[in-house]
Amino acid sequence: MTDSAMSSQSKRWPQFAAMLLMTALAVGCNTSEVAEEADPDVENAPPETEAATTTDEVETGTGTLQLVANGEDFVRQGFTTKDGWDITFDRVLVTLANVEAHQTEPPYDPDSDDELQAIETITLVAAPETIDLAAGDAEAEPILVSEEDVPGGQYNALSWDVVVAESGEAEGAAIALFGQASKDGRTLDFALRLDEPLSYTCGEFVGDERKGIVKADANANVEATLHFDHIFGDAELAADDELNAGALGFEPLAALAEGDTVEADSARLAAELDAAAYEQLTAAIASLGHVGEGHCKLN
Amino acid sequence: MKRSRFGCPWLALLLLSGALPAQAHGSNVQFRTTEAIEIQAQFDSGTPMSEAQVTVYAPDDPATPWLQGITDERGHFTFTPDPARAGNWEVKVRQAGHGDIISVPVGELASETVIAQTHAADSTSAATTAEPTDSTPAATTAEQPALIARADWSGSAYTPLQKWLMAASGLWGFIGTALFFTRRKG
View 1 (cartoon, each protein chain N blue to C red):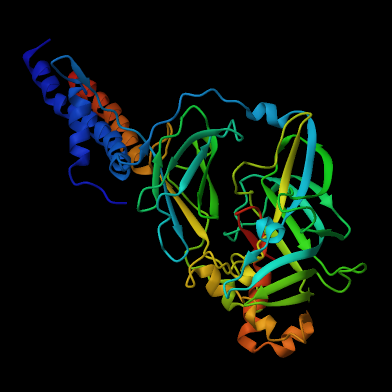
View 2 (spheres, one colour; view 1 turned 180 degrees about the vertical axis):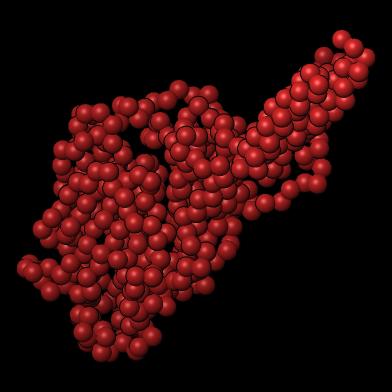
């Protein structure tokens, strides 16, 4: 190799060094961004546990999917409203229809504008079916509505309607509430018949456990949950809690009592509650539908 | 995203010099950089869901919690998913009867930067909506939680800038080499 060739070669080394530096910078910038975003105080290391249920297990075979409806402890055990009325329910009749469980990909988010994209849909209730959410004792399980044999998989979305009953005690009402309300030594029997139909599309159940995961030859369930504290409020929460701020309470209904009885359907409520209270009531009714603590979109 | 003015040079220096463990008196302290998912949990009023229960599920085992913890006082929770388990990582956050779940695609399904959000920040309460409309984001009068997952999770992928720089570096290498040998022959 001549001196001039060696000199020429040596002049090229800065170019190769620059190329290496550019590559290093490209990789380094990406890594540093993430390291700075992570808060070391809450960084959580992955556990070293073996998977108990694999996706392959879930997606093969056929299992049983149940639909349960849940009015929660408010309905089963009673509660105190935001304005101090102690409520107990004899019957809480809700008429469900068009209940479908879905496997969605991507997972459906009811808080977004995205459409539900189902890769599997199972009809759990087609024709209207009236159920009593207050059935059973204070410790009763949620009400079993229906069950179907279904392909395995994760049913991570639920759509359902509440429709006006065409027969039975709830005839003419989508939701009918019967019970007693007591305050300061006064007890009122109430019968409220709400005829506003509702239609919800919900994401995944949110609660103590994960629901809707159907494995071969096993049972799983999905849950339609109704939050009646949205109508009446909850004395256990602060008065300025958003739930109580949006709730009607019972006092406006007690004002409609004739003797010791409050009987009202939607028409009477619309006519005799003041406009703000009726608006509050209809908004609260519209917000009843959930999947556990998970959200639903009102269609 | 906030960037440190010094982050890139420091990383470049480490890559060129090699990252070595710091050792003294038998102790062994090492570091590694990771790519993490940060969850931000707040009510739609903007109040952080502080000290809320967090449960993370891996995509290949949806029934078994992969990780459990609590949010910090700002409602933040950060974890590093197993890159070998590609798919939707799902994170459930619950506090005092409020809950939400968010799905964060990781790995093969992930884009280079993922921002997932379960609740529109400008959502309005149905309490002020007498007649529900299509624009009603969620039916509720109660305070609802909102989760935001922010991740610079790229798996084996790189950002467009990084890809461009690497491609330019490679191209310059070819050109430089060709020029080098062309000049030598001349």
